[in-house]
Length: 387
Ligand SMILES: Nc1nc2c(c(=O)[nH]1)N[C@H]1C(S)=C(S)[C@@H](COP(=O)(O)OP(=O)(O)OC[C@H]3O[C@@H](n4cnc5c(N)ncnc54)[C@H](O)[C@@H]3O)O[C@H]1N2
Ligand code: MOO
Image 1 (cartoon, protein in one colour):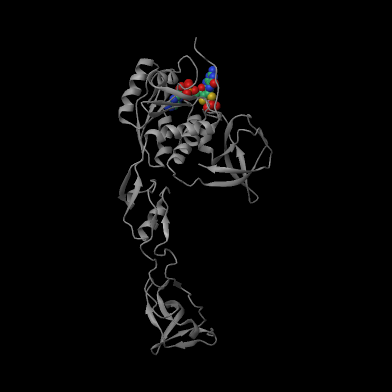
Image 2 (image 1 turned 45 degrees about the horizontal axis):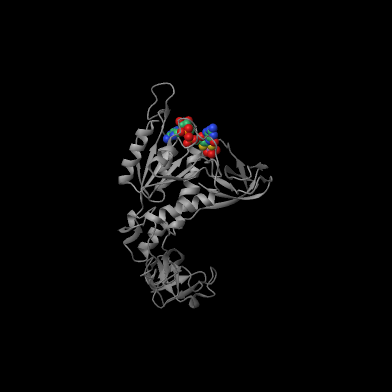
């Protein structure tokens, strides 16, 4: 008889098992690419600046380089004439001078300049090395490169960067009802693949999406075997729980082993972690929100840990708008929007249903309620992970 009973392992146990499977077969290669192509990729080595930027003290404005000391006591009422100066353009060396008087603040007269106020040393000057110092670490191994790391690398003297080659992920939706365009009753648009690929592209994964597989065990096992010949990690979406049409666990166990079926996270409980021909196969719940959190909080966390990758997770602190109950025994992800209430951040709790994509669109982020907590009081200070 089919086993409908659902047990669940703790989320950390699930992450550890993903990490263990990955480390047994998947080594990340490296490749050198242009700085311009390096957005959303992880650096595979530390980078130290070759350049000092600016290389010398330079003018921050077009004007006259002067010695600040000679300008002291100049006022509108008692301007001062300065003979010792040099015309400089923005970015040019100020040589032995230490301040710059912008053109518009001085009058040129009889070979000298007349000034109307005093200037302090380093005024309108960019100091040598104030942005980048030669030898300074500019990017660390495992750092996710955004436009800011890219520009810093270029300024530091690099035109190419060595990054980790990311694995080839494949996404296989399942379900007879899934189509691209609805033509009949009982059909649904397949859209989880969009969420999946956009989320994972932020981390530079190589992603392939396939046509939905029908609810047929022979067809599903055949598709899994074929896909695993080419791809590194397989994600099967839908059919992960224990209904009569839910075939993912059965297919994975026929071809390899199901290591985890059921994780104490909410949403996302029916997640499957399996191994076929050494490779990681994950069964992701069909509900979009459940799928999102299974990928973000289980797969990605485990993956980053396995390969020492450190993308920044931006967070903000907010006050919880109302009392919140949670299931003890499950790590729960609560979507919130952030509102400003008299200068304070207020976290407003959004719909908790796992099938509601509108709640993801409305959300600014989410709160993680740990496994052992069942209540958060109104007004508690909570950390919101931004999405
Ligand atoms: N008796 C039980 N039923 C369910 C349980 C349970 O413990 N006992 N768990 C529920 C939970 S929790 C979740 S989450 C869902 C997800 O389970 P499945 O992975 O089997 O999801 P499906 O039934 O295949 O799909 C759910 C829903 O989502 C639609 N879907 C699926 N894939 C896509 C896609 N690629 N794009 C758009 N929409 C998709 C699908 O058509 C269904 O409407 O199970 C509960 N049930
Ligand atoms: O675990 Mo399900 O993902 O709550 O709807």
